[in-house]
Each structure stands twice: as C-alpha cells, then as structure tokens.
Image 1 (tube, rainbow, N blue to C red):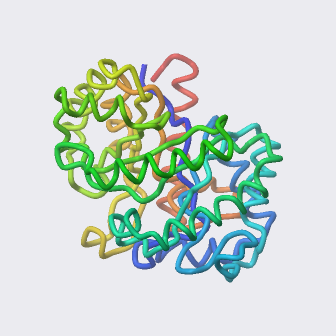
Image 2: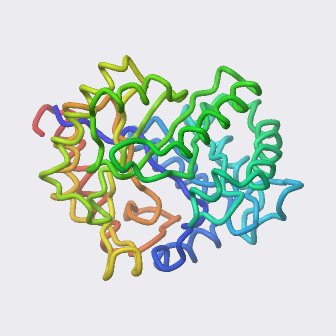
Length: 321
C-alpha cells in the first residue's frame, strides 16, 4: 500500500524570500486564530508530525529570547501557539535548533563557536517554554550538509555536539535530521558505520524531486539501498522527506508552486516500500482547503493539490487506491 503523508515541515515564513514570494506575506500577517486553523488542517489530514524548520531567522526570534528580538509577525507568540494547538490535536512537534547563523552557510554554522553559543542559549530558552506541552516531541537539526558519498566529518561533529547537549537537557526528546544528496549516497560498509555512530533517532532523506536533482523514477532505488544500509546499521529509523513543490522558473531562483498530484503520488509510491514514515516539504503555502480562512500561497493550485490528495486519501481508506 502507498503510504500516506504522516507529517510536514512547518515555517512561520520561508527562509528564501524569492521562493516564498506567494505565501510569505500571508504567513507574516496571519492572526493567532489563522495559525491555529492551519494546524487544525494538518491534523484533519491525519498527519502526526510537525517539523518546525526554524525557531529564529535573519536575527529575529519566534519566541521571547535574549539572543534575538521578536520577529515582526502579526502573531507574537508563534511557538507557544503552535505547541498549544498541537496539544489540542494530539500532534507531535519537532522544534528546530536554528537558525543562529546565516541559513545559506550550513557548514560555517556547524563550525562557528559563536553560532553554537547563540543556539545553545536559545535552545535552553525555548525548552523552558516548550517543556510543559505534551506535543513537544523532539528536535530538528536544520543545518543540513550535502551527502557526497558519505556524511561530511563537519556534519557528524555537529550532530554529535548538538545531540549531546540536547540529551543533557532532556534525554526523552527525539532527534531528527533531513540530509540532502540522497542520489549520491554510497551505501557501503563505511556509510553503514557512519549510521551506527550517528546519535539521532530519525533520518528523513530528501527525495530532491522538487529541486530537480532526481527524477521520480530514480528515487525508489535510492531508498531501497538506504533501507538495506539502515537495516545493517540497526538504526536510526529511515524516513522520507518528499518534496511537494516545483519552481515557477529557475531552480532556487524563483517562487515555489505546488506540484501536480500525479507526480506527488508517484513520489509516495517510490518511497513507500522502504521507509517507515513519509514527511513532506511542505503543507504550508502549497496546500489549502477551499473553505480555509487561513489560505497561504497560490490559491488555485494549492486548493487543487489539497483536494486531489484528500480525494486519494478517501479512496485509500476505502481500499481503492
């Protein structure tokens, strides 16, 4: 059976303004009630997980912090609203540990002691805010390094350093990473050994169809090889990060738009045999019910994708996928 979408990345604004052209203005102006409605939509879709991409961006925080001033969103208490509504809907939220350096320079962020210092202070702050919410499930490490055959040493050091700190605060919280370079992974003994020594609970590899690095038809073989490697390593759990978007024009240099559901269904089909959970990037800005009071993004295309997926989901539940 083709797996349904079990979770989504979640942003209070898209980090790349060009890509977020059609939905950033909506997100920044959302009222608290609109954010709550958006979270309800995700829960109503039968999703279980929300992965918050950032707790801070461009030197502004999404919660009260000594590190950065608050962002200029219409809703000031964004993370609290997210966790509170997720509590009500029994969702599981991964909180980001970034960005406390320029998001465009992931490797630099990993190595920079000042970035780490800011991040660790903010993590303690946001933990105090979040620890009372049942929906607070774990952490997401957003500075992702490209896998060129193997995980880079700088990335492994970064993950170990952050994982040690995060577990010193609360060992019960899960840790998620979502690397790219999926089509370059060499799933040999060296990679398996890296997996054994990677102190995370879940690895959600990006399928990279949206960013045009992989064709839909190629992705199945990548995840099949990853399944074998993760089984040999006996962990971490293998998840997928399926991209729901396409670009209006040039890759990375034009706005994101919802992809056709036919393509996305094939993406889900390719990974379903091999992964434990399917996450997507992302619901916000790319999917909207026609009845929503909290629409974000291209209205016609996002509504079509939403209702195409909803219709398929109903057929799947009836055994007619």
